[in-house]
Amino acid sequence: MASTHNFRWTNANVRGSNGELLFPPYLVTEKAGLRVGVISVLGPDYKIVTMSAASDEFTVDSPRDALDKYLPELRGKADVIVLLAQLSGKDTRELLLGLGEGSGIDICVESHDPRQYRRINKVGDVHLVAANNQGKYVGQLDMLVSKAGIVEDATLTIHALDKQSPEIKELVDKVKKFEEENKAAGDTRTSFIHPRDKGDDNHRFLGAHSCGTCHKETFQNYLQSAHARAWDSLTTKGQTNNEDCVACHSVGFFHKNGYDRVADAKVAGREALTNVQCEACHGYGTGHDREGSWLAQAKDSCVTCHDQQNSPEFDYETYWAKIAH
Ligand code: HEC
Ligand code: HEC
Ligand code: HEC
Ligand code: HEC
Image (cartoon, rainbow, N blue to C red; front, side):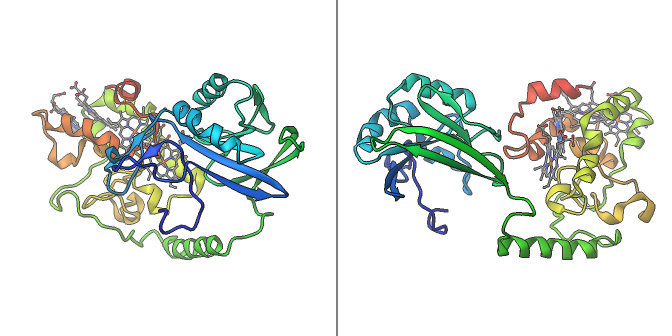
């Protein structure tokens, strides 16, 4: 990432396999006659998601130790110090309280929780703001800074990147392409074009109704669950033609004979495989098994959809308890 994107990277507590920090521990930038120091720390309990999945290549030092080490150095070089804290809200507050007043940190940008502060919070003498969700907002902080580098006053404005915002050409092009592709896809007889390499062409998904003819009680439970409404969530967002979404909100998207726009009951006479129905976890109905393999497979299925990005809170015990049958 660092070699393909021309950003200025900084982090004070993540080390690579050679034991060295991956990035410079802090940056100093001159703006409006002010030297602004930026230092960043990552919470040790956050997974580092890499393309190789080899996250144990990295070690993450305690954020407190890293700040104790680098802040004194940075204070000598900067008038104003901004801490980028990739920590939970609770851990950020604990960290700032632990450092105490006079730590040198003037502003802390909390960046893990997708929360939004409309006004500046203060923890001790630190002004706390939040980075917000998925780049959909830009925060503007106006500060009155004394000659001694003290932030005497600060105001916060949150700008939503809505239709009034200046357009970014690359994004506009992407949206146009998406709309173009989905205009064609508005015809329900057009199949998604994506790999369907899982499963077996001789097997079929039969749909929850068919299971319900025998497993009556389980079927009733299923109808009460969020899984039975997963498709509605996409309808609400207008994303039922977006294969990046459909994959986890349907049955067997990557499987032979799995969900497809052409599998709509009205079109093809087949059970519509929208929603996370029984077979999304148990597998092909035509492969009905009573020897236990179906149960093991169902247990393993959760994390194919409940991944870090879409279900960060996922934990088998608590989630299973909500849909137990
Ligand atoms: C095919 C993808 C898929 C699989 C497999 C899957 N889920 Fe889900 N799950 C979803 C989706 C999508 C939602 C969100 C439904 C909605 O739109 O509200 C969800 C929602 C849930 C919810 C509701 C969350 C809440 O807070 O109300 C629970 C509980 C849950 N899943 C448990 C499980 C468990 C346990 C497993 C494995 C046994 C599992 N899921 C397997 C896709 C999946
Ligand atoms: C890798 C699987 C996966 C993909 C891809 C995915 N989702 Fe989900 N989605 C889930 C799971 C799992 C949940 C339930 C999360 C939970 O409650 O822990 C969920 C929940 C949701 C919810 C929340 C339902 C509610 O109100 O609580 C919405 C809305 C949603 N997804 C829409 C989308 C959209 C739009 C896309 C495409 C941009 C998408 N999803 C792509 C798995 C996925
Ligand atoms: C979100 C994934 C998921 C969905 C959806 C789902 N199941 Fe299951 N089901 C499981 C898991 C996981 C187990 C095994 C739990 C265990 O062994 O602890 C299970 C267990 C079962 C069992 C065995 C229960 C027992 O007493 O041993 C039956 C029968 C069953 N499911 C039928 C169904 C039917 C019918 C539907 C649809 C109406 C359905 N399931 C929907 C994941 C799911
Ligand atoms: C004709 C009736 C019938 C239909 C239809 C049916 N089942 Fe079953 N199923 C049974 C019986 C009987 C058992 C064994 C007794 C039991 O565990 O309840 C069973 C067992 C299971 C088990 C437990 C497997 C194990 O290894 O212990 C699961 C999971 C299951 N069914 C899921 C489904 C799903 C999913 C569907 C729909 C695709 C479905 N069943 C359709 C009758 C049926």
